[in-house]
Image 1 (spheres, rainbow, N blue to C red):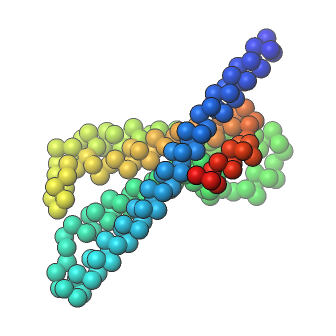
Image 2: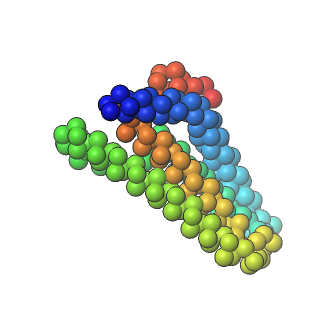
Image 3: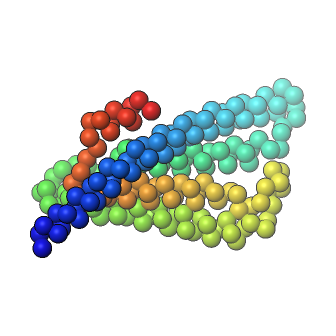
Length: 185
């Protein structure tokens, strides 16, 4: 019986090891898109200020577009934060506990993060579906487009949360070679 569990653990570890390069690329892509989004939003807001105070003609599209970009870079950045453990935590409480309690806290924390991301994606989809027929007046987009960052960001938070949960359950960590790939990409 014990060898069957070891075989399953080994299979799951191999699976995680095989998909990790894809998750590395997805994480890095999210980080780059977040950076591009924040730069684009800064340029749009800069144009808005210039147009308002110098040209005395505020572009009506600048504020909704900058808010849309902000939604993207916040949620993609949050997903990367989940993967890289960059989110807030009460580490002092965790480290004061015995190892078994620390592990249980890690498992419950990552399970909650993954579930939260899944709920964000699901309810974001329902919101997009429910508002699709409305139109964002200034941009002319369907109203449901506003919820795309919630759907994609939630799905990525769930995916990266599940990866971290698997790492905790299987007691695996990223190898030095995998960590180097993150630095190179």
